[in-house]
Image (cartoon, rainbow, N blue to C red; front, side):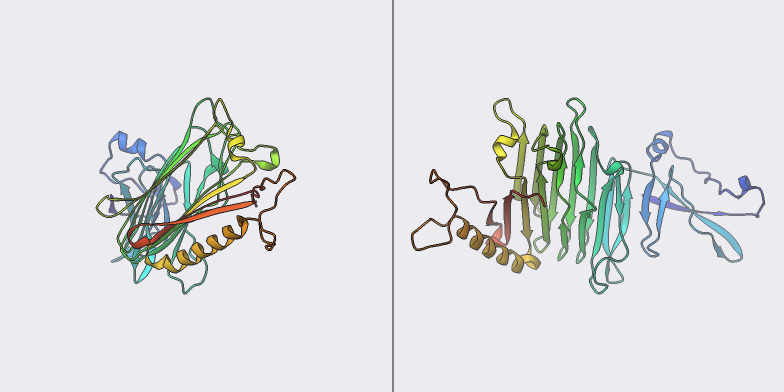
Length: 351
């Protein structure tokens, strides 16, 4: 919750100390002040101006009213445990970020202009200080997309997970609520785990019956150019989609963990990338149908049984055993009336 207090400036002075705005008389508890020691990014709903609130207070540009000069002081009274919070709502008929909060090690960037100016959409870039996730980091985010809004959540580069210190695991949690007739695309760059890294992520989406959602969740084998190939210790990714009444619509989990019998590299063989893509909702139905047809066509060509009259079939080696195709994919529908689809894919090349 944010409260605003107006503090009049009685006079101007050449003394730099006297020009500093005084904190309001109302004091915050010590526990609240310590929680506000990290910078908070707030996007003003109407002026679209970004402010940083440090230790709970930030002065906006001075405004004159009735011949007196005032400074607007924002006092942050309550901050949750989340590392980041973003709210997208309709303002003057356009999708607008009305709240944007982040603290170390997370940072959000919301550019004013992305893509066609006629497109009503908000782009949110998520990044971490230092260019990656450090061992032991815990990131928790909440994203709300209001009714009729369109938003995209992405990254500037691959999500790098650095080497683990001992058995410490890096964690990332994302909770999303999507309103009626709204569209959200979660399209990050792939996760790249360094050798010995331990990483777990969970994404929970709560949607309305007419919400639309795109989820891209993918991981590479690691720093392939440096000789690292599935050398991390743990990777776990969980995606869950619930309807308005908390009825589960989609539950999926991927676990790659180094074992004592076989390594992750042995189980993944020559594939360097695995990906999952979810298409949900009425706005994405045409794309869903097109992708299902494309996957069916590509895989039928790759796995066609060899025959003397056909030239399109899998290559065979000298032992007459079929070679692994460089790209494999599957697509299956789910949800009421097959209104959604999940596509899984694996590929040799990381590019």
